[in-house]
Amino acid sequence: MKVSVIIPVYKVEQYIADCARSILAQTWQDIEYIFVDDASPDASIAILEDIIDSEFAALRPKISIIRKPINEGLPQARLSGLKVATGDYVMHVDSDDWVDTDMAERLVAEARKTGADVVYHYICKENGGGKIHIAKDRQYREPVDFAKAIMARRAHGYLVCKFIRRSLYTPDLFYPKVGMHEDIILGVQILSRAETAVLLRQAPYHYRRTNSASFTRQSREVRHKASARSFLQLFEFYESKGWPEEMAWMRAPVLDYCMANFIRYDKENIPSVRDAFMELPLSAKRIWLRLAAGQIR
Image 1: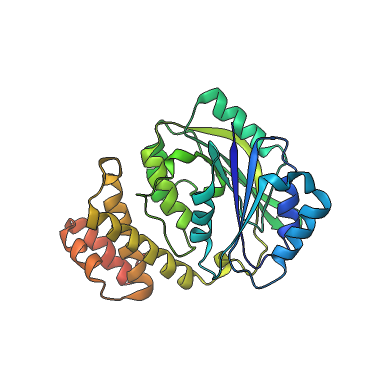
Image 2: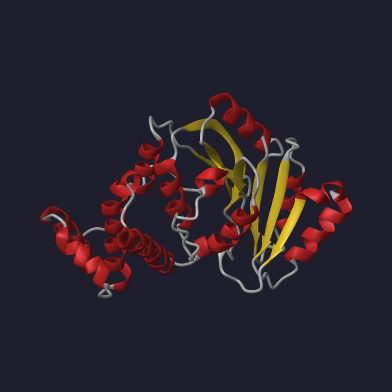
């Protein structure tokens, strides 16, 4: 089983060494390593190149570094990696995080044992000072149930803790442009199409929460405006071409998320949201009116 590991790189010169060493030291042998230089202005790529040459030169034939001429953000960097990936499964890693060196081997073993389209696992949130938190999800009966739980904010949407069959990344999916909750947007589409998803009750991925430059460290307003706009683009994408049967359930929660966040943060007159809002039952409209009045946070 061949694994494609995709690692977007942008302004992570403090962290890229830890990330690269943990990835390149994987015990599973059949891996292609795809680093995507998202026009990083710092020394990240130079550090990466030095580590490869000095410590992992034997892996050079398996390593690709895609150099993008302009910075387009995390989701588009991931998409650049997906376009050249040839593995049976895809593993995403953010370049300011790190993973256990046997992570790919454990995921391959679970995928082989179960034949699952998606293997998802716990994630270790590294808060600094030795403080960690294990973010857990439960096993869902069907992949779409997992997707619905993510949209209802009852499950984690992180793409980095989902080992996904590459064939599920089809060109007709909506790939967001803004890097806030883009993993949720892509993940729920994939889970809606997957036939099986199994939980590996382990936490081999280490999510660094001390990177002050991360987009997730922006203000709540900035983050949720960006997120709402991405979800609105998702809504308009499928509204214009028709919602596939397996994704039809997404229409209402996506619209709900967009409207709630625009009421909270933008208060702009977005026609596509406004028109769809008018179709909803009165009970839903009352919730949004309470949001607008600040009665619900």
